[in-house]
Image 1 (cartoon, rainbow over the protein chains, first blue to last red):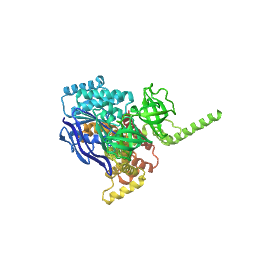
Image 2 (cartoon, rainbow over the protein chains, first blue to last red; image 1 turned 135 degrees about the vertical axis):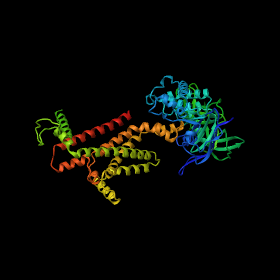
Image 3 (tube, rainbow over the protein chains, first blue to last red; image 1 turned 120 degrees about the horizontal axis):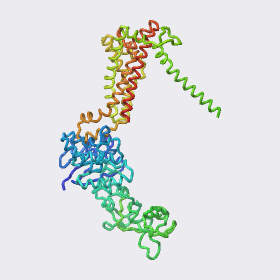
Image 4 (cartoon, chains in turn green, brown; image 1 turned 90 degrees about the vertical axis):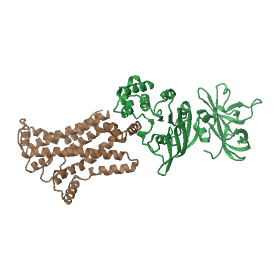
Amino acid sequence: MKSAVEILGIEKRFGPTVAIEHVDLAIDEGEFLSLLGASGCGKSTLLRIIAGFESPTRGRIKIQGEDVTGWPPHRRPSNIVFQRGALFPHMNVFDNIAYSLRLRKWPRKRIAEKVEEMLALVRLEDLGHRGANELSGGQIQRVALARALAAEPRVLLLDEPLSALDLKLREQMQLELRTIQRQLGATFVFVTHDQTEALVMSDRIAIMNQGHLVQLGTPREIYTRPASVFASAFIGQTNLIRCTVAAVEGSTVTVEIGGQRMPAASPASLSPGEPATLSVRPEAVRVHRIGPEAPFGIDAKVAEIIYLGSSIRIGAAINGDAIVWADLRDEEAEGLTPGMDVRLAWPPTAIVWKETSK
Amino acid sequence: MVGRQRSSVLAAAYVVLVLLFLYLPVAVTVMFSFADSPRLSMPIEGLTLDWYRRAFSNPLMGVAVRNSVILAAVSAIAAGALGAGFAFGVIRMKSRRLRGVLLGASLLPAVIPLLVIGISLAVAFSAIGWLQGLRNAAFGHVLVCLPFVVLTMNARLETFDFSILEAARDLGASPFRAFLDITLPIIRPSILGAALLAAALSLDEFVVTWFNIGSQQTLPVLVWGLVRRGVDPSINAVASLLLFSLICLVGISNLSAWRRRR
Protein backbone atom coordinates (compact mmCIF):
# COMPACT_ATOMS: atom_id res chain seq x y z
CA MET A 1 0.00 0.00 0.00
CA LYS A 2 1.19 3.51 -0.80
CA SER A 3 2.22 5.63 2.15
CA ALA A 4 0.39 8.89 2.82
CA VAL A 5 3.10 10.13 5.15
CA GLU A 6 6.62 8.84 5.57
CA ILE A 7 8.56 9.91 8.62
CA LEU A 8 12.18 9.07 7.91
CA GLY A 9 14.73 9.21 10.72
CA ILE A 10 13.20 12.32 12.27
CA GLU A 11 15.10 13.80 15.15
CA LYS A 12 14.33 17.05 16.96
CA ARG A 13 16.42 18.88 19.51
CA PHE A 14 15.57 22.09 21.33
CA GLY A 15 19.00 23.22 22.43
CA PRO A 16 20.36 20.42 24.60
CA THR A 17 16.98 18.70 25.13
CA VAL A 18 15.98 15.92 22.77
CA ALA A 19 12.27 16.06 21.90
CA ILE A 20 12.29 13.30 19.30
CA GLU A 21 14.97 10.70 18.92
CA HIS A 22 15.12 9.08 15.50
CA VAL A 23 11.55 8.14 14.62
CA ASP A 24 10.73 6.13 11.51
CA LEU A 25 7.06 5.69 10.68
CA ALA A 26 5.07 5.09 7.52
CA ILE A 27 1.40 6.06 7.64
CA ASP A 28 -0.82 4.32 5.10
CA GLU A 29 -3.26 5.96 2.73
CA GLY A 30 -6.73 6.15 4.30
CA GLU A 31 -5.47 5.11 7.70
CA PHE A 32 -6.51 6.47 11.10
CA LEU A 33 -3.25 6.52 13.04
CA SER A 34 -2.96 7.71 16.62
CA LEU A 35 0.23 9.06 18.13
CA LEU A 36 -0.24 8.13 21.76
CA GLY A 37 1.89 9.15 24.71
CA ALA A 38 2.08 11.15 27.90
CA SER A 39 2.60 14.89 27.71
CA GLY A 40 6.14 15.79 26.71
CA CYS A 41 6.76 12.51 24.87
CA GLY A 42 7.27 14.30 21.55
CA LYS A 43 3.97 13.38 19.87
CA SER A 44 2.80 16.96 19.34
CA THR A 45 6.25 18.01 18.16
CA LEU A 46 6.16 15.20 15.61
CA LEU A 47 2.77 16.41 14.39
CA ARG A 48 4.05 19.98 14.13
CA ILE A 49 7.03 18.72 12.12
CA ILE A 50 4.63 17.04 9.66
CA ALA A 51 2.61 20.28 9.45
CA GLY A 52 5.76 22.36 8.95
CA PHE A 53 5.62 24.46 12.14
CA GLU A 54 8.82 22.91 13.45
CA SER A 55 11.77 21.88 11.35
CA PRO A 56 13.44 18.60 12.25
CA THR A 57 17.06 18.60 13.37
CA ARG A 58 17.58 15.54 11.20
CA GLY A 59 15.48 13.37 8.90
CA ARG A 60 12.93 13.83 6.11
CA ILE A 61 9.15 14.07 5.85
CA LYS A 62 7.42 12.81 2.71
CA ILE A 63 3.75 13.30 1.94
CA GLN A 64 2.47 10.98 -0.79
CA GLY A 65 6.01 10.35 -1.90
CA GLU A 66 6.91 14.03 -2.16
CA ASP A 67 9.69 15.30 0.08
CA VAL A 68 8.22 18.32 1.92
CA THR A 69 10.90 18.65 4.59
CA GLY A 70 11.91 22.24 3.81
CA TRP A 71 8.43 23.47 2.85
CA PRO A 72 6.70 26.20 4.86
CA PRO A 73 3.32 25.26 6.40
CA HIS A 74 1.25 27.17 3.85
CA ARG A 75 2.64 25.12 0.95
CA ARG A 76 2.15 21.69 2.53
CA PRO A 77 -0.73 19.44 1.49
CA SER A 78 -1.55 18.78 5.14
CA ASN A 79 -4.01 20.55 7.42
CA ILE A 80 -4.29 20.59 11.14
CA VAL A 81 -7.09 20.72 13.71
CA PHE A 82 -5.78 22.52 16.77
CA GLN A 83 -6.39 21.56 20.38
CA ARG A 84 -8.70 24.50 21.04
CA GLY A 85 -9.95 24.94 17.50
CA ALA A 86 -8.07 28.18 16.82
CA LEU A 87 -11.02 29.60 14.90
CA PHE A 88 -10.61 33.13 13.60
CA PRO A 89 -12.58 35.09 16.22
CA HIS A 90 -13.44 38.01 13.93
CA MET A 91 -15.08 35.81 11.31
CA ASN A 92 -18.28 33.81 11.27
CA VAL A 93 -18.40 30.06 10.77
CA PHE A 94 -18.84 30.35 7.00
CA ASP A 95 -15.84 32.64 6.56
CA ASN A 96 -13.70 30.44 8.77
CA ILE A 97 -14.42 27.39 6.63
CA ALA A 98 -14.09 29.37 3.39
CA TYR A 99 -10.72 30.89 4.31
CA SER A 100 -8.48 28.39 2.53
CA LEU A 101 -10.74 28.38 -0.53
CA ARG A 102 -10.69 32.16 -0.83
CA LEU A 103 -6.90 32.10 -0.63
CA ARG A 104 -7.00 29.71 -3.57
CA LYS A 105 -9.34 32.12 -5.38
CA TRP A 106 -12.11 29.60 -5.92
CA PRO A 107 -15.21 31.12 -7.54
CA ARG A 108 -17.85 32.29 -5.06
CA LYS A 109 -20.42 29.71 -5.99
CA ARG A 110 -18.02 26.82 -5.66
CA ILE A 111 -16.89 28.11 -2.26
CA ALA A 112 -20.48 28.33 -1.03
CA GLU A 113 -21.15 24.77 -2.18
CA LYS A 114 -18.02 23.43 -0.54
CA VAL A 115 -18.76 25.20 2.75
CA GLU A 116 -22.33 23.84 2.75
CA GLU A 117 -20.96 20.37 2.11
CA MET A 118 -18.51 20.68 5.00
CA LEU A 119 -21.16 22.06 7.35
CA ALA A 120 -23.38 19.11 6.49
CA LEU A 121 -20.48 16.72 7.10
CA VAL A 122 -20.01 18.01 10.65
CA ARG A 123 -23.78 18.42 11.12
CA LEU A 124 -23.80 22.19 11.64
CA GLU A 125 -25.94 23.08 8.60
CA ASP A 126 -27.64 26.08 10.20
CA LEU A 127 -24.69 27.69 11.90
CA GLY A 128 -22.90 29.31 8.93
CA HIS A 129 -23.71 32.83 10.08
CA ARG A 130 -22.90 32.26 13.74
CA GLY A 131 -19.87 34.19 15.03
CA ALA A 132 -16.83 32.12 15.93
CA ASN A 133 -17.09 33.17 19.57
CA GLU A 134 -20.75 32.25 19.88
CA LEU A 135 -20.11 28.50 19.66
CA SER A 136 -19.97 25.76 22.27
CA GLY A 137 -16.81 23.69 22.75
CA GLY A 138 -18.07 20.82 20.62
CA GLN A 139 -19.22 23.17 17.86
CA ILE A 140 -15.83 24.91 17.83
CA GLN A 141 -14.06 21.61 17.20
CA ARG A 142 -16.57 20.67 14.51
CA VAL A 143 -16.01 23.96 12.70
CA ALA A 144 -12.23 23.54 13.06
CA LEU A 145 -12.57 20.09 11.51
CA ALA A 146 -14.75 21.42 8.68
CA ARG A 147 -12.29 24.27 8.05
CA ALA A 148 -9.33 21.90 7.83
CA LEU A 149 -11.18 19.38 5.64
CA ALA A 150 -12.44 22.12 3.29
CA ALA A 151 -8.82 22.70 2.28
CA GLU A 152 -8.85 19.11 0.93
CA PRO A 153 -5.69 17.98 2.69
CA ARG A 154 -3.86 14.84 1.62
CA VAL A 155 -3.41 14.15 5.31
CA LEU A 156 -5.39 15.61 8.21
CA LEU A 157 -3.47 16.21 11.42
CA LEU A 158 -5.40 16.41 14.70
CA ASP A 159 -3.66 17.76 17.80
CA GLU A 160 -5.67 16.50 20.78
CA PRO A 161 -8.81 18.11 19.37
CA LEU A 162 -11.14 16.50 21.91
CA SER A 163 -9.14 16.99 25.08
CA ALA A 164 -10.94 20.21 26.09
CA LEU A 165 -14.39 18.60 25.88
CA ASP A 166 -16.23 16.84 28.68
CA LEU A 167 -16.38 13.06 28.71
CA LYS A 168 -19.86 12.53 27.21
CA LEU A 169 -19.24 14.89 24.32
CA ARG A 170 -15.79 13.47 23.81
CA GLU A 171 -17.09 9.93 23.42
CA GLN A 172 -19.71 11.11 20.96
CA MET A 173 -17.16 13.10 18.93
CA GLN A 174 -14.78 10.14 18.84
CA LEU A 175 -17.36 8.07 17.00
CA GLU A 176 -18.27 10.99 14.75
CA LEU A 177 -14.65 11.61 13.80
CA ARG A 178 -14.22 7.94 13.03
CA THR A 179 -17.33 7.92 10.84
CA ILE A 180 -16.23 11.03 8.95
CA GLN A 181 -12.78 9.56 8.39
CA ARG A 182 -14.25 6.32 6.99
CA GLN A 183 -16.76 8.21 4.88
CA LEU A 184 -14.03 10.32 3.25
CA GLY A 185 -11.42 7.57 3.15
CA ALA A 186 -8.99 10.24 4.33
CA THR A 187 -5.72 9.80 6.19
CA PHE A 188 -5.96 11.04 9.77
CA VAL A 189 -3.03 11.42 12.14
CA PHE A 190 -4.44 11.90 15.61
CA VAL A 191 -2.39 12.98 18.61
CA THR A 192 -3.75 12.00 22.02
CA HIS A 193 -2.67 11.20 25.54
CA ASP A 194 -5.89 9.28 26.17
CA GLN A 195 -5.37 5.56 25.62
CA THR A 196 -9.09 4.78 25.49
CA GLU A 197 -9.53 7.38 22.77
CA ALA A 198 -6.67 5.82 20.80
CA LEU A 199 -8.09 2.30 21.22
CA VAL A 200 -11.60 3.35 20.15
CA MET A 201 -10.67 5.34 17.06
CA SER A 202 -7.48 4.03 15.54
CA ASP A 203 -6.57 1.61 12.79
CA ARG A 204 -3.09 1.66 14.23
CA ILE A 205 -1.55 3.21 17.33
CA ALA A 206 2.01 4.49 17.61
CA ILE A 207 3.03 4.71 21.26
CA MET A 208 5.69 7.29 22.02
CA ASN A 209 7.76 7.64 25.16
CA GLN A 210 10.52 10.17 25.82
CA GLY A 211 10.98 10.95 22.15
CA HIS A 212 11.04 7.32 21.05
CA LEU A 213 8.48 5.34 19.10
CA VAL A 214 8.09 2.37 21.42
CA GLN A 215 5.41 0.35 19.65
CA LEU A 216 3.37 0.45 16.47
CA GLY A 217 0.40 -1.82 15.93
CA THR A 218 -3.35 -2.27 15.80
CA PRO A 219 -5.21 -1.56 19.04
CA ARG A 220 -5.63 -5.31 19.55
CA GLU A 221 -1.95 -6.06 18.99
CA ILE A 222 -0.94 -3.33 21.36
CA TYR A 223 -3.35 -4.40 24.07
CA THR A 224 -2.70 -8.13 23.89
CA ARG A 225 0.98 -8.11 22.96
CA PRO A 226 2.53 -4.96 24.40
CA ALA A 227 6.17 -4.71 23.38
CA SER A 228 7.45 -3.41 26.68
CA VAL A 229 6.65 -2.87 30.32
CA PHE A 230 5.92 0.76 29.43
CA ALA A 231 3.46 -0.12 26.68
CA SER A 232 1.65 -2.65 28.83
CA ALA A 233 1.28 -0.17 31.68
CA PHE A 234 0.31 2.72 29.40
CA ILE A 235 -2.41 0.92 27.49
CA GLY A 236 -5.15 -0.34 29.77
CA GLN A 237 -4.44 -1.52 33.28
CA THR A 238 -2.03 -4.22 34.20
CA ASN A 239 -0.37 -5.90 37.15
CA LEU A 240 3.39 -5.49 37.07
CA ILE A 241 4.82 -8.20 39.31
CA ARG A 242 8.49 -8.51 40.20
CA CYS A 243 9.76 -12.03 39.81
CA THR A 244 12.83 -14.13 39.14
CA VAL A 245 13.42 -16.30 36.08
CA ALA A 246 13.53 -19.94 37.23
CA ALA A 247 13.81 -21.82 33.95
CA VAL A 248 13.84 -21.04 30.23
CA GLU A 249 12.54 -23.38 27.54
CA GLY A 250 12.25 -21.78 24.10
CA SER A 251 9.90 -18.83 24.33
CA THR A 252 8.28 -20.22 27.47
CA VAL A 253 9.74 -19.13 30.74
CA THR A 254 9.03 -20.26 34.27
CA VAL A 255 9.16 -17.48 36.80
CA GLU A 256 9.26 -17.55 40.56
CA ILE A 257 7.05 -15.19 42.50
CA GLY A 258 7.48 -15.28 46.25
CA GLY A 259 8.82 -18.82 46.10
CA GLN A 260 6.01 -20.10 43.82
CA ARG A 261 6.34 -20.90 40.12
CA MET A 262 4.26 -19.91 37.07
CA PRO A 263 4.84 -20.32 33.33
CA ALA A 264 4.91 -17.18 31.17
CA ALA A 265 5.83 -15.99 27.69
CA SER A 266 8.83 -13.81 27.00
CA PRO A 267 9.61 -11.70 23.93
CA ALA A 268 13.15 -11.09 25.14
CA SER A 269 15.88 -13.58 25.85
CA LEU A 270 16.10 -14.24 29.56
CA SER A 271 18.43 -16.45 31.50
CA PRO A 272 17.70 -18.37 34.71
CA GLY A 273 18.31 -16.45 37.92
CA GLU A 274 17.65 -13.08 36.28
CA PRO A 275 15.25 -10.62 37.94
CA ALA A 276 12.24 -9.83 35.70
CA THR A 277 8.85 -8.14 35.55
CA LEU A 278 5.66 -10.02 34.78
CA SER A 279 2.69 -8.21 33.28
CA VAL A 280 -0.80 -9.65 33.56
CA ARG A 281 -4.09 -7.82 32.94
CA PRO A 282 -6.57 -7.79 35.86
CA GLU A 283 -9.26 -9.35 33.68
CA ALA A 284 -6.96 -12.31 32.93
CA VAL A 285 -6.41 -13.19 36.58
CA ARG A 286 -8.78 -15.80 38.04
CA VAL A 287 -9.28 -16.22 41.75
CA HIS A 288 -9.98 -19.72 43.07
CA ARG A 289 -10.75 -20.97 46.54
CA ILE A 290 -8.15 -23.36 47.93
CA GLY A 291 -9.40 -26.90 47.56
CA PRO A 292 -9.08 -30.09 45.53
CA GLU A 293 -10.47 -28.39 42.36
CA ALA A 294 -8.16 -25.42 42.58
CA PRO A 295 -5.94 -25.35 39.47
CA PHE A 296 -2.21 -24.83 39.37
CA GLY A 297 -1.39 -21.28 40.44
CA ILE A 298 -0.02 -18.99 43.06
CA ASP A 299 -1.33 -18.85 46.62
CA ALA A 300 -2.30 -15.47 47.98
CA LYS A 301 -4.49 -13.81 50.57
CA VAL A 302 -7.41 -11.51 49.74
CA ALA A 303 -6.49 -8.01 50.89
CA GLU A 304 -8.99 -5.69 49.22
CA ILE A 305 -12.40 -5.94 47.59
CA ILE A 306 -13.48 -2.98 45.47
CA TYR A 307 -16.91 -2.75 43.89
CA LEU A 308 -16.71 -1.21 40.39
CA GLY A 309 -20.29 -1.69 39.21
CA SER A 310 -19.76 -3.81 36.12
CA SER A 311 -17.14 -5.89 37.91
CA ILE A 312 -15.54 -6.46 41.27
CA ARG A 313 -11.84 -5.88 41.75
CA ILE A 314 -10.02 -8.15 44.16
CA GLY A 315 -6.59 -7.29 45.47
CA ALA A 316 -4.68 -10.37 46.62
CA ALA A 317 -1.34 -10.24 48.42
CA ILE A 318 1.34 -12.80 47.61
CA ASN A 319 3.39 -13.53 50.75
CA GLY A 320 1.79 -10.50 52.37
CA ASP A 321 3.67 -8.32 49.90
CA ALA A 322 2.99 -7.85 46.18
CA ILE A 323 -0.67 -7.10 45.49
CA VAL A 324 -2.16 -8.62 42.36
CA TRP A 325 -5.44 -7.16 41.12
CA ALA A 326 -8.10 -9.32 39.54
CA ASP A 327 -11.35 -8.14 37.92
CA LEU A 328 -14.12 -10.64 38.53
CA ARG A 329 -17.77 -10.82 37.64
CA ASP A 330 -20.23 -10.47 40.48
CA GLU A 331 -20.91 -14.20 40.87
CA GLU A 332 -17.20 -15.11 40.67
CA ALA A 333 -16.46 -12.87 43.61
CA GLU A 334 -19.24 -14.20 45.75
CA GLY A 335 -18.12 -15.45 49.15
CA LEU A 336 -14.68 -13.87 48.94
CA THR A 337 -13.80 -11.97 52.10
CA PRO A 338 -10.70 -10.09 53.16
CA GLY A 339 -8.10 -12.36 54.74
CA MET A 340 -9.29 -15.45 52.84
CA ASP A 341 -6.64 -17.74 51.31
CA VAL A 342 -7.04 -18.05 47.54
CA ARG A 343 -5.14 -19.33 44.54
CA LEU A 344 -4.46 -16.99 41.64
CA ALA A 345 -4.21 -18.35 38.12
CA TRP A 346 -3.67 -16.76 34.74
CA PRO A 347 -2.99 -18.06 31.23
CA PRO A 348 0.65 -18.73 30.34
CA THR A 349 0.44 -15.93 27.76
CA ALA A 350 1.22 -13.35 30.48
CA ILE A 351 4.42 -11.68 29.41
CA VAL A 352 7.74 -11.37 31.23
CA TRP A 353 10.38 -8.72 30.54
CA LYS A 354 13.86 -8.18 31.76
CA GLU A 355 13.86 -6.02 34.85
CA THR A 356 15.66 -3.21 33.04
CA SER A 357 13.56 -3.02 29.87
CA LYS A 358 11.49 0.09 29.37
CA MET B 1 -24.67 48.71 65.99
CA VAL B 2 -24.29 52.44 66.64
CA GLY B 3 -20.50 52.08 66.57
CA ARG B 4 -20.69 50.37 63.25
CA GLN B 5 -22.88 53.09 61.78
CA ARG B 6 -20.52 55.77 63.00
CA SER B 7 -17.52 54.04 61.47
CA SER B 8 -19.32 53.68 58.14
CA VAL B 9 -20.13 57.41 58.20
CA LEU B 10 -16.49 58.14 58.91
CA ALA B 11 -15.42 55.89 56.06
CA ALA B 12 -17.79 57.62 53.68
CA ALA B 13 -16.56 61.03 54.78
CA TYR B 14 -12.99 59.92 54.25
CA VAL B 15 -13.75 58.76 50.70
CA VAL B 16 -15.48 62.06 49.94
CA LEU B 17 -12.48 64.01 51.25
CA VAL B 18 -10.04 62.11 49.09
CA LEU B 19 -12.24 62.60 46.03
CA LEU B 20 -12.59 66.32 46.79
CA PHE B 21 -8.82 66.60 47.07
CA LEU B 22 -8.48 64.90 43.69
CA TYR B 23 -11.14 66.79 41.78
CA LEU B 24 -11.78 70.11 43.50
CA PRO B 25 -8.89 72.06 41.91
CA VAL B 26 -9.94 70.86 38.46
CA ALA B 27 -13.58 71.65 39.13
CA VAL B 28 -12.67 75.15 40.35
CA THR B 29 -10.66 75.81 37.18
CA VAL B 30 -13.52 74.72 34.93
CA MET B 31 -15.98 76.74 37.03
CA PHE B 32 -13.94 79.95 36.87
CA SER B 33 -13.48 79.57 33.13
CA PHE B 34 -17.20 80.45 32.90
CA ALA B 35 -17.29 83.08 35.71
CA ASP B 36 -17.76 86.68 34.62
CA SER B 37 -15.66 88.30 37.36
CA PRO B 38 -11.99 88.84 36.48
CA ARG B 39 -11.06 88.30 40.14
CA LEU B 40 -10.95 84.64 40.98
CA SER B 41 -13.22 84.80 43.99
CA MET B 42 -16.48 83.43 45.21
CA PRO B 43 -19.35 83.81 44.90
CA ILE B 44 -19.66 83.62 41.16
CA GLU B 45 -22.05 86.33 40.06
CA GLY B 46 -22.70 85.50 36.41
CA LEU B 47 -21.67 83.15 33.62
CA THR B 48 -19.82 84.16 30.47
CA LEU B 49 -17.86 82.75 27.53
CA ASP B 50 -15.65 85.83 27.42
CA TRP B 51 -12.56 84.05 28.65
CA TYR B 52 -12.82 81.53 25.84
CA ARG B 53 -13.24 84.37 23.36
CA ARG B 54 -10.26 86.17 24.86
CA ALA B 55 -8.12 83.02 24.84
CA PHE B 56 -8.78 82.54 21.13
CA SER B 57 -8.14 86.19 20.36
CA ASN B 58 -4.58 85.71 21.67
CA PRO B 59 -2.49 85.51 18.43
CA LEU B 60 -0.28 82.81 19.98
CA MET B 61 -3.27 80.57 20.64
CA GLY B 62 -3.70 79.45 17.02
CA VAL B 63 -0.04 78.52 16.71
CA ALA B 64 -0.14 76.69 20.04
CA VAL B 65 -3.20 74.65 19.09
CA ARG B 66 -1.73 73.82 15.69
CA ASN B 67 1.60 72.69 17.20
CA SER B 68 -0.10 70.68 19.93
CA VAL B 69 -2.23 68.89 17.35
CA ILE B 70 0.82 68.18 15.17
CA LEU B 71 2.74 66.76 18.14
CA ALA B 72 -0.24 64.70 19.28
CA ALA B 73 -0.69 63.27 15.78
CA VAL B 74 3.02 62.46 15.41
CA SER B 75 3.02 60.81 18.84
CA ALA B 76 -0.10 58.78 18.06
CA ILE B 77 1.20 57.50 14.73
CA ALA B 78 4.90 57.05 15.52
CA ALA B 79 4.58 55.77 19.11
CA GLY B 80 1.55 53.67 18.10
CA ALA B 81 3.34 51.94 15.23
CA LEU B 82 6.72 51.59 16.97
CA GLY B 83 5.19 50.42 20.23
CA ALA B 84 2.83 47.92 18.63
CA GLY B 85 5.64 46.48 16.51
CA PHE B 86 7.94 46.24 19.50
CA ALA B 87 5.33 44.59 21.75
CA PHE B 88 4.52 42.11 18.98
CA GLY B 89 8.17 41.23 18.48
CA VAL B 90 8.79 40.79 22.19
CA ILE B 91 5.76 38.60 22.89
CA ARG B 92 6.78 36.13 20.17
CA MET B 93 10.16 35.52 21.75
CA LYS B 94 10.61 32.07 23.18
CA SER B 95 12.84 32.98 26.14
CA ARG B 96 10.66 34.19 28.97
CA ARG B 97 13.60 35.89 30.65
CA LEU B 98 14.68 37.82 27.55
CA ARG B 99 11.07 38.90 27.12
CA GLY B 100 10.97 40.23 30.66
CA VAL B 101 14.25 42.09 30.26
CA LEU B 102 13.24 43.72 26.97
CA LEU B 103 9.82 44.69 28.28
CA GLY B 104 11.35 46.14 31.43
CA ALA B 105 13.91 48.08 29.43
CA SER B 106 11.21 49.56 27.20
CA LEU B 107 9.08 50.59 30.19
CA LEU B 108 11.93 52.15 32.19
CA PRO B 109 11.70 55.60 30.52
CA ALA B 110 8.24 55.92 32.07
CA VAL B 111 9.83 56.26 35.51
CA ILE B 112 12.87 58.31 34.48
CA PRO B 113 12.14 61.91 35.63
CA LEU B 114 10.85 63.99 32.74
CA LEU B 115 13.35 66.68 33.71
CA VAL B 116 16.19 64.23 33.04
CA ILE B 117 14.71 63.16 29.72
CA GLY B 118 14.14 66.75 28.70
CA ILE B 119 17.66 67.90 29.53
CA SER B 120 19.28 64.77 28.04
CA LEU B 121 17.44 65.24 24.76
CA ALA B 122 18.31 68.93 24.64
CA VAL B 123 21.98 68.11 25.19
CA ALA B 124 21.93 65.28 22.67
CA PHE B 125 20.22 67.39 20.00
CA SER B 126 22.62 70.27 20.48
CA ALA B 127 25.52 67.80 20.23
CA ILE B 128 24.37 66.71 16.77
CA GLY B 129 23.61 70.29 15.85
CA TRP B 130 19.81 70.10 15.68
CA LEU B 131 18.31 73.44 16.63
CA GLN B 132 15.49 73.50 19.16
CA GLY B 133 12.06 73.39 17.60
CA LEU B 134 9.01 71.32 16.82
CA ARG B 135 11.06 68.44 15.36
CA ASN B 136 13.09 68.00 18.55
CA ALA B 137 9.96 68.23 20.68
CA ALA B 138 8.31 65.58 18.49
CA PHE B 139 11.15 63.15 19.20
CA GLY B 140 10.74 63.89 22.90
CA HIS B 141 6.99 63.25 22.76
CA VAL B 142 7.38 59.91 21.00
CA LEU B 143 9.96 58.90 23.59
CA VAL B 144 7.68 59.83 26.46
CA CYS B 145 4.62 58.07 24.97
CA LEU B 146 6.33 54.90 23.77
CA PRO B 147 6.53 53.03 27.12
CA PHE B 148 2.80 53.48 27.68
CA VAL B 149 1.98 52.19 24.20
CA VAL B 150 4.22 49.15 24.73
CA LEU B 151 2.55 48.51 28.09
CA THR B 152 -1.00 48.69 26.67
CA MET B 153 -0.16 46.58 23.63
CA ASN B 154 1.65 44.00 25.70
CA ALA B 155 -1.36 43.62 28.00
CA ARG B 156 -3.54 43.01 24.96
CA LEU B 157 -1.15 40.60 23.25
CA GLU B 158 -0.75 38.46 26.35
CA THR B 159 -4.23 37.14 25.71
CA PHE B 160 -3.72 36.89 21.95
CA ASP B 161 -4.09 33.31 20.73
CA PHE B 162 -1.15 32.81 18.40
CA SER B 163 -2.41 29.42 17.30
CA ILE B 164 -4.89 31.25 15.05
CA LEU B 165 -1.93 32.60 13.09
CA GLU B 166 -0.64 29.06 12.73
CA ALA B 167 -4.10 28.02 11.61
CA ALA B 168 -4.03 30.70 8.90
CA ARG B 169 -0.57 29.62 7.76
CA ASP B 170 -1.71 26.01 7.75
CA LEU B 171 -4.71 26.88 5.57
CA GLY B 172 -2.43 28.40 2.93
CA ALA B 173 -1.75 31.98 3.98
CA SER B 174 1.77 33.37 3.61
CA PRO B 175 3.11 35.11 6.75
CA PHE B 176 2.24 38.53 5.30
CA ARG B 177 -1.24 37.39 4.24
CA ALA B 178 -1.87 35.96 7.71
CA PHE B 179 -0.86 39.31 9.21
CA LEU B 180 -3.25 41.21 6.94
CA ASP B 181 -6.20 38.82 7.27
CA ILE B 182 -5.94 37.80 10.89
CA THR B 183 -3.53 39.75 13.10
CA LEU B 184 -4.30 43.25 11.93
CA PRO B 185 -8.12 43.12 12.10
CA ILE B 186 -7.95 41.59 15.56
CA ILE B 187 -5.44 43.95 17.17
CA ARG B 188 -6.44 47.11 15.28
CA PRO B 189 -8.74 48.41 18.06
CA SER B 190 -5.96 47.93 20.59
CA ILE B 191 -3.44 49.79 18.42
CA LEU B 192 -5.97 52.58 17.97
CA GLY B 193 -6.56 52.75 21.72
CA ALA B 194 -2.83 52.87 22.43
CA ALA B 195 -2.34 55.58 19.78
CA LEU B 196 -5.08 57.73 21.30
CA LEU B 197 -3.47 57.30 24.69
CA ALA B 198 -0.20 58.52 23.15
CA ALA B 199 -2.02 61.55 21.72
CA ALA B 200 -3.47 62.33 25.15
CA LEU B 201 -0.06 62.06 26.82
CA SER B 202 1.48 64.28 24.15
CA LEU B 203 -1.20 66.92 24.42
CA ASP B 204 -0.39 67.87 28.01
CA GLU B 205 3.36 67.12 27.90
CA PHE B 206 5.22 70.17 29.22
CA VAL B 207 8.65 69.42 30.73
CA VAL B 208 10.31 67.64 27.82
CA THR B 209 8.60 70.02 25.38
CA TRP B 210 9.83 73.10 27.16
CA PHE B 211 13.48 71.98 26.99
CA ASN B 212 13.34 71.16 23.30
CA ILE B 213 10.83 73.34 21.52
CA GLY B 214 12.75 76.62 21.69
CA SER B 215 10.66 79.64 20.85
CA GLN B 216 7.68 77.63 19.56
CA GLN B 217 4.39 77.27 21.41
CA THR B 218 2.20 74.36 22.43
CA LEU B 219 -0.88 74.63 24.59
CA PRO B 220 0.89 73.76 27.86
CA VAL B 221 3.82 76.05 26.99
CA LEU B 222 1.38 78.88 26.24
CA VAL B 223 -0.42 78.40 29.56
CA TRP B 224 2.88 78.42 31.38
CA GLY B 225 3.81 81.70 29.64
CA LEU B 226 0.47 83.28 30.54
CA VAL B 227 0.77 82.27 34.21
CA ARG B 228 4.17 83.93 34.39
CA ARG B 229 2.54 87.23 33.62
CA GLY B 230 0.02 86.93 36.44
CA VAL B 231 -3.10 84.82 36.58
CA ASP B 232 -5.27 85.72 33.61
CA PRO B 233 -8.73 84.04 33.78
CA SER B 234 -8.37 83.03 30.12
CA ILE B 235 -5.91 80.42 31.39
CA ASN B 236 -8.88 78.70 32.99
CA ALA B 237 -10.50 78.56 29.56
CA VAL B 238 -7.40 77.09 27.89
CA ALA B 239 -6.96 74.56 30.70
CA SER B 240 -10.61 73.56 30.50
CA LEU B 241 -10.34 73.03 26.76
CA LEU B 242 -7.24 70.89 27.26
CA LEU B 243 -9.03 68.89 29.93
CA PHE B 244 -12.01 68.33 27.66
CA SER B 245 -9.87 67.08 24.76
CA LEU B 246 -7.95 64.77 27.07
CA ILE B 247 -11.13 63.30 28.53
CA CYS B 248 -12.37 62.70 24.99
CA LEU B 249 -9.13 61.01 23.88
CA VAL B 250 -8.85 58.77 26.93
CA GLY B 251 -12.57 58.00 26.70
CA ILE B 252 -12.35 56.90 23.07
CA SER B 253 -9.16 55.01 23.81
CA ASN B 254 -10.84 53.01 26.58
CA LEU B 255 -13.95 52.51 24.52
CA SER B 256 -12.01 50.95 21.64
CA ALA B 257 -10.19 48.64 24.03
CA TRP B 258 -13.47 47.72 25.71
CA ARG B 259 -15.19 46.93 22.42
CA ARG B 260 -12.34 44.62 21.55
CA ARG B 261 -12.73 42.67 24.79
CA ARG B 262 -16.40 41.99 24.24
